[in-house]
Image 1 (cartoon, helix red, strand yellow):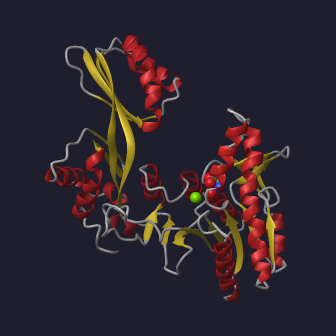
Image 2 (cartoon, protein in one colour; image 1 turned 90 degrees about the vertical axis):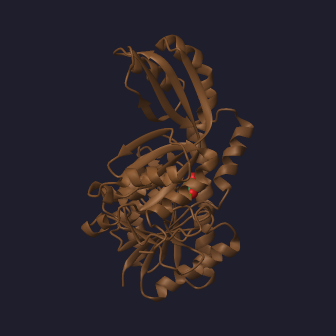
Length: 406
Ligand code: ASP
Ligand code: MG
């Protein structure tokens, strides 16, 4: 008999039939004798439509009121799921984030969990009930409702699992697990059985949006082993856990592509201390989120600086090209869309060499040009033409032999 935490995402509780289906699944785990705490998201699309509603009544809604509004999405699903469990004879109690003891700081819409004392959760579990906790929300010390940032139900689940010392935390979603590449693009992508926290984080930051990154960071910090699996079948999912020596045998765990990127090139910048500082201060002040930055070796006292940004920020970038060029005395500032970032990720890179060269060979065999390169300890990223990103993803996936299940 063990204690498990299950989290069901928005698609899994997207309509009444699916909520009844989730109730059946919970009942099954209980029949095995497990005690279950369930964390749920709002029904799919609800959070987005609440945000839309807010914008229809106010151009810039106050963040406190946004939290008040968005928290209702999860409150709908916890109560409905409790009712669905009652309907099949299972004792269940729904709790808001505050009732579950989730105390956060006061940063509305992106609050951080400060403290979690799940007394009510424990009490209802001891009484034999399934405890259903609203994901994504918490409460400040002063009793204000807060939310934990988009996708925050994942964080709620991991934090509760840590606090009640659950055996496992199962993250139920609409995909089977974490794949070696996007299966819609790479048909022979395979499900990864085990992945280290850092690999999961790098894949997520590189566009494989299976889980909220903050939730993975939290899991790493508190060593919460979790499993990403589907709520639509009984297949085992992907286990995310602390790394082990044997996990380093695999050089590349997965490849991921982030589209909708753009790059800004500032050419002919005087090679002097303070220029980059001023430049990026201006860019930050304009609210442009900068990702990869590359500066070439200067030639005759001039350098080129290139950085990538999300396509959403292109307008903001365009607005400041004139001031960038004036500030940095650059010869030209260009903004280019239609690029993508392709990354290969694996903790095995720490102990294996030749990963970069294999990646570059795979791309050159397809005649795909590399526009920028950046590396970290367990990740190599290249910027390529967006139109060829699918081709590139398939070629790189093959090159690293990722189509073989392991
Ligand atoms: N409902 C929230 C969102 O859509 C939280 C979550 O689903 O995890 O971001
Ligand atoms: Mg989610």
